[in-house]
Length: 138
Image 1 (cartoon, rainbow, N blue to C red):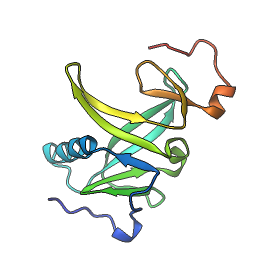
Image 2 (cartoon, one colour):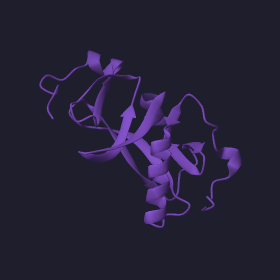
Image 3 (cartoon, helix red, strand yellow):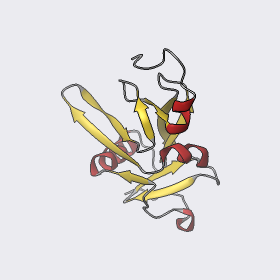
Image 4 (cartoon, helix red, strand yellow):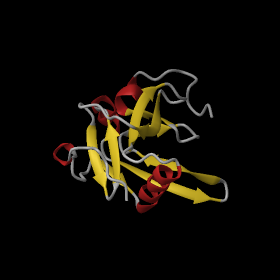
């Protein structure tokens, strides 16, 4: 297995902030091995946009920032910036592979609505400032 360059004292132990299923752990591990990304972490973030106002994003992160929250799941590391964590706390990340293809799925207890594509969402605060015409645009 690859050794990761994160100081162990800065890694947050598995908490209620994030849950990664075994499927997600296996898929991230496979991606790291296939793309030769030893030392990388999975970055999970939220950005503005999408049909419901906010959208999920993921990518492989070579150099996490000091301010990132860091989580360890077996040999897989996950990093989240503090601003994104405000919208993602309590999330579960899964990887599903079915006849229609595979992909990561995020279950977010803070989302009060989401778009049909599952990639964007709205929180309680954002639902009070709803934009007309954005529901169900996928």
